[in-house]
Image (tube, rainbow, N blue to C red; front, side):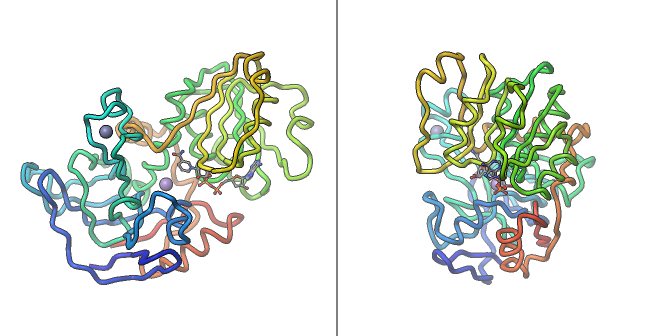
Length: 336
Ligand code: NAI
Ligand code: MN
Ligand code: ZN
């Protein structure tokens, strides 16, 4: 089979590998579509502190089960599945409180173990979620990125009377906009980005107001409006202090970033408004929820997709994705 391997930081190769056999409790998936994420590019360039090399990348993928390991019902062969990349131990403290995404032995498929930019991939059977017919093959790899929005929303508990502000209209910002408008029916979603093309995509995904903050700071553009729910989906460390300053008293702020640089905020700025800060990493068993959102048409994943390219063109696809955020959002690899 063909697999996209990051042999070492900086070195991407399309390698011919032996077909993997599913171990006990695992399934093997014949991959059909896989989408590119910023973290795939980070692993390629050696900027992901969790990655181990050599590694088959890809954690957003869809396919059909073609073999099962011991203890897995053979009836699952032929099932259309999306694979949750979060592999957890099941018994540590975070696992015991329903937070397997921060398991003390967390293994992320495509990061710590081999992933889905490959003709075939193996995964624990419980990570492979059946995809209903209403969700087409070519959009099913986008279930995973929407689980990021579902996870942060589970902390933020969006309400119809919220005024939301989202920093960043990349894939993460767009999934958050769609969840807030389509699922939670939030009355107003304001989105800030520096790229007009990304702001146009935000509008397309349901943003009520889009603001270009490349020159005029948001504080001047919001005209006193105080967001009650803020999501940082741009993840620059300076954004937290800005969000805290802009927030309404009693607002909730959700953070998704992994920067190693400090964010500077005072206790006074947080406590005087009694702000709640939440962080969210990957997803804790949110696949069923997102599958339901898609099945019911509450979200529109196709609005994120700008390109479909064959697996053979993976290096060009990843370069395009990385270098051209104005014309590119989600790039999906057609694997088979
Ligand atoms: P992206 O780079 O495509 O999008 C970020 C957007 O933010 C860009 O459109 C950029 O123009 C904009 N931006 C940058 N600085 C800004 C600022 N100061 N104000 C407003 N907009 C600004 O990235 P993507 O894929 O949407 O991911 C966003 C972030 O989310 C990344 O930092 C990534 O590491 C993080 N992430 C976190 C996850 C988690 O589970 N916590 C999962 C996936 C991504
Ligand atoms: Mn991703
Ligand atoms: Zn665990």
